Image (cartoon, rainbow, N blue to C red; front, side, top):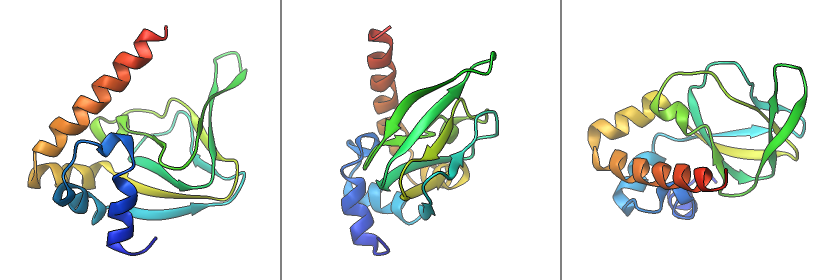
Length: 144
């Protein structure tokens, strides 16, 4: 997925970017990098600092949360166009789960500093993304 146009087309299908215009998506796309992970490879580790946001392009990954008593639970499964690590775009903090590639998995990754650079160029991007994050948070709270 090396071409800018392919990435833009793909990102239009990512729910977090639903409200962005084509120029805004293109701006973000220029700052995104591709990363490949082999089946079984850890993508992010619970308890470590989070610096990036990941979008699954191809493959499958599981989020595993380890409780204080050592018990591990799969808390989410990610597939194409799913994303994780969005909180790392907004603030520093520790990862709340380990994400492991179940199959060979390709991701697009946006770091916090690249995201902030986009926001300096076009602050409206923040409004759109924060609205989508708020909607996701409301949806999550309604399931509790």
